[in-house]
Amino acid sequence: MRREKRGFWIAFCAVFFYPIGWLTGRGRYEGREHIPATGGALIVANHISHLDPIFSGLIVERSGRVPRFLAKHSLWSTPVLGRALAGSGQIPVYRESADAQQSLRDGTAALREGKIVIIYPEGTITRDPDTWPMHARTGVARLALTSDVPVVPMVHWGTHRVLDGYNKKFRPLPRGPITVRCGEPVDLTAYRGRPVDAALLREVTDLLMVRVRDLLAEVRGEPAPTTFFKRAS
Image (cartoon, one colour):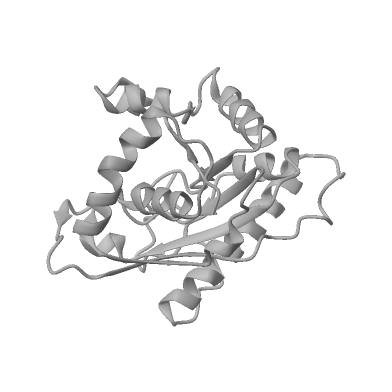
């Protein structure tokens, strides 16, 4: 398998990601064939734990590609991590500020340059009581519609049992199963070319999150809910 060139900072991160992934769970990486071997792709994932980016990165890296994340900009001010994020070409997200649109422009540019971009459209770890995906932000639809690249749904399951961010619980032992699964790319042909307005962005966002939710239902082996949990405003 021909690998995408990683560079120093990606290799630096991999030195930490692989041991952490092994120590915190027995990872199962399924559906890697849906991650394109070359060219850009947008990976749309659920978010249930602060461990998710490690396992998202590992499935992409195991597929021979380099993961780029859309992540909150405050992480760039963290010592060492900030250097690694900047050096590896990760994309800061500025919410509710004058720089908010820059995140979308940077994400679109990365996709057009043939890179793999990972986004968690919920914007934070789910607050759904049963750990299903929440009502998502529409930035994912804008990225998907302005970049003619495959849009791949991806889910994590099991990371929340190891690291529960809201309840501040960390249980790495015994090492339990952690599943990361990619599904078939979502066909957005019917939506491309239409005027991009709020209604279209909401429709496409919900379509993508339904695919993510259905994929998670397959992994969990139980029926998915018919609505998305909404956070209190």
